[in-house]
Length: 550
Figure 1 (tube, helix red, strand yellow):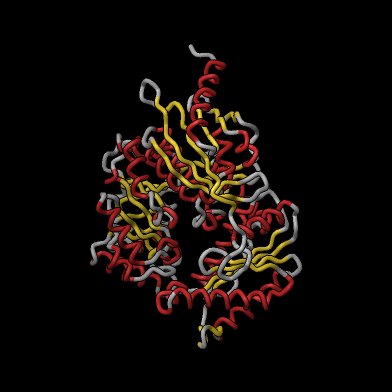
Figure 2 (cartoon, one colour; figure 1 turned 120 degrees about the vertical axis):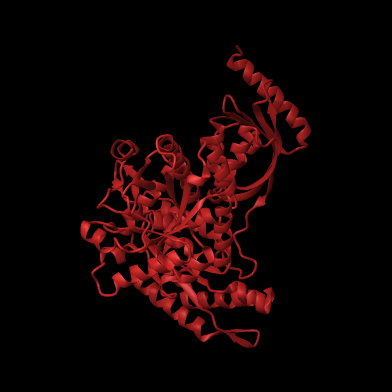
């Protein structure tokens, strides 16, 4: 058996060979079996790594990859470690010793052992340059500068307020008038923000048509007044190339003073407030106040702990399943996977406390695929007992628009052995905010794969008859509030007419929120196919499903 010193000697010899052919570029080798990374000393110094030999090198290296690039990095590493990919030429934003990010190119290949399994991943590292912190269009600090300042504010526990605001229909302005005109719009918007905020804060150009301003000297109330002044000025029109360009904007705000959370947690909560402003409050400023029963500080720390848990392979997450029954026979026909999370500090926390914030976070894709894999593994056990059972899994906007969605579905279903014809994706309410044409194409593609599709909370928010007609889902679940308040004037008629309309269009109706016998009796003559609610069962464990219903 090869001892450790011999293995290191092999790695060193290989490193010398790579150094010769690297022509002055940094060399990086990763020993797959020993999980040791060997890197050129100068590269270790550049990146602030612990040395040229790094135990658990894959984990250490990931911490230096920009948070928004980590999911892609992780997927590419999985492809290399599984043998799915051999060569690579990839670019990631990578953190340097001073905390800044540089665009770094990684290129190389995988060396296989005698059995054809990956032995060493080796190649070169090229620093493409430190990421600039000035936006060339507006000359404001850009989002990299924003994150540097935000990190410093959190570490120093400064009392800060941030507003994230954005211009609606910027793509339409560019298409109608050209990108030169669009850049002039962004410049005028930047000048307006700087004029209103003045010396009391810093204004940043974020991605696309978004801006942020951060202040330590203004209260949330004072900043809200300034935002409203900006919003009204934009609606009155900004002078752009001899015309007045009317703009509508949205804005989210957060107030923090340091705690056990990082800049990405603050960003996730800020984005949530921004999207609430955009989709539900007509651009009025929305202040992030935290989850129900928590202040902003506690909620930020909760979201931070959840995000960290996702990065640690979702160790504190679990699934429970709520049974779905045939409305006529009251026999089990499906189960809906429901997410649970527990921590020592916060105890059992409902998804409503963190899912709305994280749905648009890049990490939510990772959690979503963990849910899908775990649910398929559990569902397969039940299919062996009840071959016609359907597994319902909620799918988020982040997953719906993920370029890897169909590849991940195929990969997970094949590795688990779960037949896709028994899978039903429940589109959450926020999925309906996706561009309709994009959503329609994706839903139709899912159905072509044999996956069932369900629109959840139909009749609420932005749900419309158009979704029923254009998406042609297999199922809809009616908005729960209609059912819980079935005796309220008009609700009974809405439930009946929506059920009849969906049935006529070929969509089956599932009624959730059936909490008692009274509700069950009222809707028994409606064209309802499936029912779900506490009258039948709350969410229970897999073993309880087997014990009670199979």
